[in-house]
Image 1 (cartoon, rainbow, N blue to C red):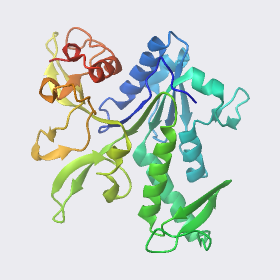
Image 2 (image 1 turned 180 degrees about the vertical axis):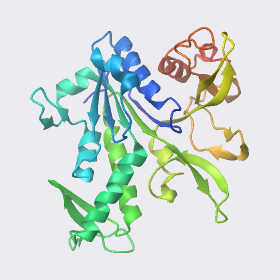
Image 3 (image 1 turned 180 degrees about the horizontal axis):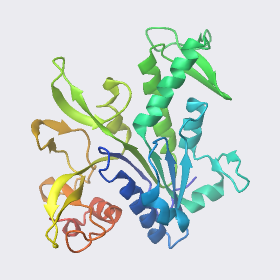
Image 4 (image 1 turned 60 degrees about the horizontal axis):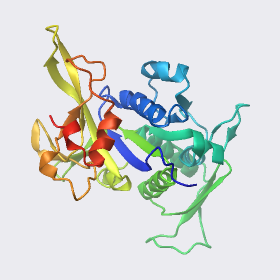
Length: 314
């Protein structure tokens, strides 16, 4: 697989609470890929979240966005690995691995629901334990304090795992994220957000929501870029009403109500860019609720990554 000359190869972790604009970003990514490729490439969404697709229906109808619903999959370890590798239903509806044509026609993939997927893995692991199907692997060289274990999930052999439940979740999630980034295009994982607390249960940071508290500060390091979404700021419209302003935070920043609590992750900008000239966030208002519509947020982000600061100055 070679890098596509039209669509940049990179990865994003997009975090935000419910109704903060994560679905809007998936729609905008589909628009960005369609525009950049001249209508030759599409975006695929793999979701384990239970929300609907109403906000995406127009893109689905015109075939710029395809959706695979992974809710309730029977073999979560096998299925998420296949999703990470780019499997999809073919013309006959059969679940198949990607081909060279896949990478020529799919410009971006969104894997929605880091918490939902990790919860499915945790439940799958619990089922393996309760059914007695986890075994110590006598042939594997252990790099852990305890012998590595293995089990079968569908037709997939899951091997070389630490015996602790969260250690297994950590190694598998990192593996799946790494696999997904071998794709020559844009890879986006989405997540809700969660507080990291100290020994006295005081919040000290905010990161992606995932099973296993120790994973929260680690997960952003698996991605090239991490951005946070927020829609909790009411702003007056030209018509005199008040609406939520959708923001995409692109720099390290602290929680507005908890000034000592920072968000983990940011855009990784080039050394030639002066951080002081980069805004903390950009407003995402493509419908022009507050006036002139803002550009597609992915145009804004990639312009910024190329050093085009005036396009995002507030």
